[in-house]
Amino acid sequence: IPVSPAASTQWRLWDLGLRKALAPLQAAWVAFSQPVPTGRGQLLTQVLLCGCLSAAAAGLTHRWLVSSLLCPLGPSTTAATLCGLLVFLVLGLVPPARCLFALSVPTLSTEQGRRLLLSWSAATLAVAVVPNVLANVGAAGQVLRCVTEGSLEGLLNTTHQLHAASRALGRAGGQALTLQAHGNGSVLLLHTLKATRQVLEDFSGLEALGRAAVLGTQQVAAGLFVLGLLADSGWYIHRYLTDLRFDNIYATGQLVRQLAEARATQLVASPPGWLLWAARPRLSRGELLRCLLRLGLLTLLLVATAVAVATDHVAFLLAQAAVDWAQKLPTVPITLTVKYDASYTVLGFVPFLFNQPPPESPFVSAHNSFHWELRLTSAGCRLLPAQRPQAAAALTAGALQLAACATVLLQTYAWRLRHAIAAAFFPAQEARRVRHLHARLQRRCDRHQGQPLPLETPSCRPAAHWSLERTQSRKAEGGELGKHTDRGPCCVASGGVLHLSESLFLYLHNNPCDLLSYVGMWEGRKWTLGMKGFEKQ
Image 1 (cartoon, helix red, strand yellow):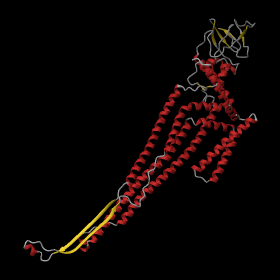
Image 2 (tube, one colour; image 1 turned 120 degrees about the vertical axis):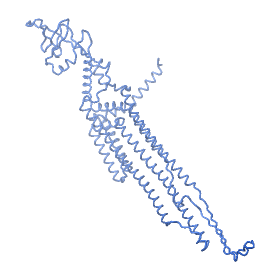
Image 3 (tube, rainbow, N blue to C red; image 1 turned 135 degrees about the horizontal axis):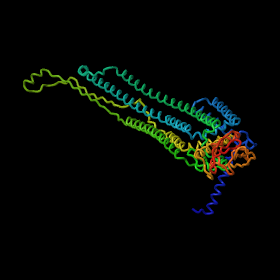
Image 4 (cartoon, one colour; image 1 turned 180 degrees about the horizontal axis):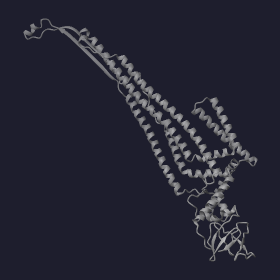
């Protein structure tokens, strides 16, 4: 696709501007990674960076002591100041400590950092969801308590009014109508109140215990995972400095330059599957498969988080419905009307004989009305409101889990970044690792070309040129003494160039006087090469 000159110029300007913007950051990184500053500018930059990092560490420590551990303000400030001063001294005087801190940043995108994010997400969700669910259950329990108290009070009040109505009937009515509530009503009321209060106290204690347990678990887990983060970075530095094969699978610019100088760029023309290009953002097929498997596991955690949030909302809806139902319970007015009329007759059988109604004389007449209200909820019982779910906590937990999912994709790039950081702090060790990787690639290429190479067949490394000088001694028929022009091993060929393989002659680089036998075919004749020459067989 043709590109216009204006667009090309614009891209060139963007690239130049980006390079200028990144130049101060690159200079700051070079100063930070230097074991010993080479100038005043690097020293000042290093001091400023260490001071900023120590101030951030002191601020985080102070917040952790005051907000999480609830320590007094004075001792917390002193401890945070001492922590910041210690961090400043360690970062300024111990270069591996700076490397350890720098490695901790990309380590957040590895498995250790993913565990930290997931633990933080779980703790945030537990702090918000568990107490909220318990509070809503407590609100539903309060509704049960109020309804129980109101029903019991209404029952006792009804019994009392019936007793009053029976007493109003007089002695005769009292003998005819006897209402009795079995048991002591006040004792029953007190027992019910005590039982419901005990249930609510248990729920309150369980809620407080859950908050304390979740908070303590969050603090301990955060501390352990931060220590694990630092330990993982320290383990990486140790393996990087002691094992040349550890994490030595990256084709860096230094390796490419070394191969170009040795004219062995064909070693990476068809690279092995384990060799990764550090500057290329593309992931291999194996890396993508591992990412998909880890994303599947994290999807299950997201489902569990969604279930927990849904449980919180369901508990809130149930508690809100129970509270609204209790608040809308009507007060039932009750009216008891008692009418009692008594009369008597004298010689009532006489009118009966004449089929006449006997005359009645009124004896007593009573008309009473009793009014009271039946409340299904106790007037002295306060209903607790339902606690709404904390949307911010759920969103925070979800964002942390999404960040953990992102670390699955960023883990490969984090490994490459860790390798680059360690290489910046330890350039001599990186040079040794590059030479080791070069030799490893050479050995691999030699294994693939294990058969003797015919004439004019290119090998995996540049050909070694040898010059011959015929000796004047003819003690051995056809004997010739080979002389290497650059003090290499004494390998010869009959008037030509012999292509050597590193798998057979690699150790002669360090031991040129060792005896080596090599059988090669040259013009149909078989020669045996030795330290001082060869003899025709």
